[in-house]
Amino acid sequence: MKGIIDIQYVRFSVSDLVKQQRFLDDFGMVTSLKDGTLIGRGTGSNPYLYVATQGEDRFIGMGFAAETEEDLKRIAAIDGVSIEPITDMPGGGLRARLTDPDGWDVDIVYGVEPVAELKVTPRNAFNSSESITRLGERVSLTPETHIVKRMGHVVINATDFRVSEAWYKERIGFITSDEIYMGDESNTIGAFMRVNRETSMLTITPCSAWEQARLASIIVPMKSMTGTP
Image: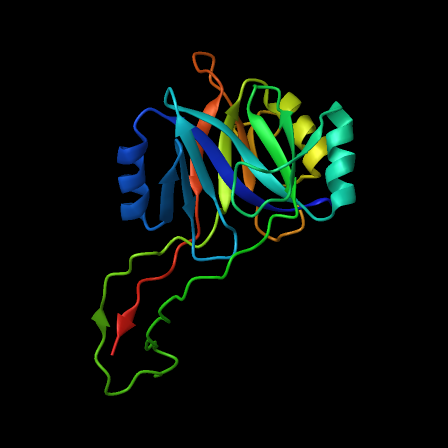
């Protein structure tokens, strides 16, 4: 089922936005902090891939981009949620905010205006046993300020794996790329999930008996180390 084309961003509540901004800057994002909202973007055309507001340190949710406005309307109608103009983030567009079985916000957005991609220094050619593409040139690695490209993958621990799996499949249109099991194949302990991309963008794993539902990790594609001759 088509409908979602990519994961766009993650949202957090953070107690110290200034400290978090320093971390994101050091990590390789382009950041802005204004009116109590911290935004981080990558070198790609998405105007934001990380959003944080002031508050208790916690994960709030994530956002996915709908392929068409009709897809946005269809997904919003499943849970009967409203579609509102996006007025609190750069790029505008429309947004429907759903709530998954563990209480995470799941935003579906459409029509967010892209921004110009940032210039990235090309990687030096390098030699291998099969091909010599750099001959008589030295390699000098130089530090790069902005190395994060976009949001790539989110991993969540769910209270009930199968309930969350079904919820995301029905609304987002996910299909399972790979299931992880321990011992017997019926003992599934997680699944990599994708839509139309070849690579997965969401992994769901069940919580242990002593755990609460939580964000497990975020994966962002980054620019390779570069050298300048």
